[in-house]
Length: 477
Image (tube, rainbow, N blue to C red; front, side, top):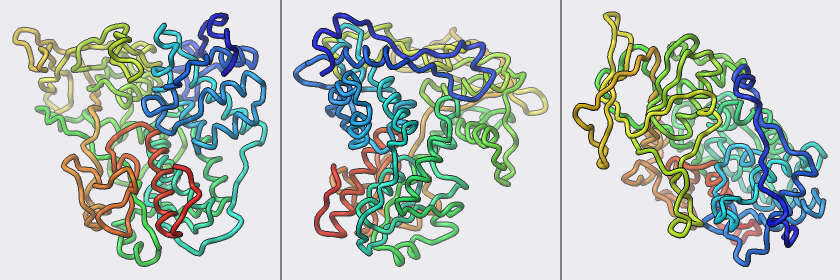
């Protein structure tokens, strides 16, 4: 596993970023990759740790064989490393960019706060595989004659479609938007992942036989019953898009928006895509004081987008207390810890307010937001009297998560059983819904989660569908 003494000889080194003052001037990716010499040293740090928690259930949801491809990079066998990586992960260039890397938190060297730079190495392997032409279409040698419909082309839908096509099924992906990718394309900003990575995967999948149908909103433009009549199996991978409503006083003021419409608009603008004619006003942060309510990844994406649009100031509100700089390893490791984390967007100049609840929004006489009234909270997240303060705001984004999948259309029409949390009721063994012809995977089944979990569920659901249709399957779980 790398060099036996590598973890003693080499310090942890990650890829660096462009300076904040430079990167906020554009929407392109801004990471500065390590050269091959440095990557080899980082791979050499992977130690023979006995039980590699990095690719177990606590580390990597898709069970990437991390010690194996670290060793292959150390041996300079990059092509075999790429084959190994793709054997468990359909889209490592996605996860190498936007996964929070629970594998690194589970790394044995993280007990000394110096985990192997797994995410950096993963991205390097994936990028080299594309640059060297090692990533090629893998069409099935024989066709099964079975037809599968997949609703939604996010990471779960794409992973399932690719797996099913490669074993010979006729796979059709129905996507509501003009292009594939789901929130990978329309939710995640280009500065975190440029959309060319999605485009070339779509081309690969089309060469493998996958057919994409765009501007198809199942349940609206085409009924679920029609889909079930045309296909042998139907899989729902539509995501969890219904925003959690904070029910703030005056949240209907002009200048107050949910996070996702803002991010979608920005991504369309960057890609020079036409805006949908739904009457939604343009949302732009240029010259404005911005307040983002929420402490998660979506809130952070709003922060980075606002800076690139020319916001005067950006303040992020988090109701949680400021976490410790470092966790207690012996009580948490190898699980994901709560500790102070600063995203690249937050490092670009955001003010962060912890233990802060939003009480209400203030407006001028024209009904436009002018301020956010906040207060500190106690351990039960209740406002503490006498701690109120006001933040000036011309633009407010609510980014406090999602309540589940949108019910109107697809889910109402399908009639599949739902959980109390608003997700499709299906287990993670066969991913079957209450309708014997319908499967579900990704955020639509488990609720909002990580891209790597969506890829895992898409792969596992594809295996379940193949086994149902054929009586047996060679697809990995």
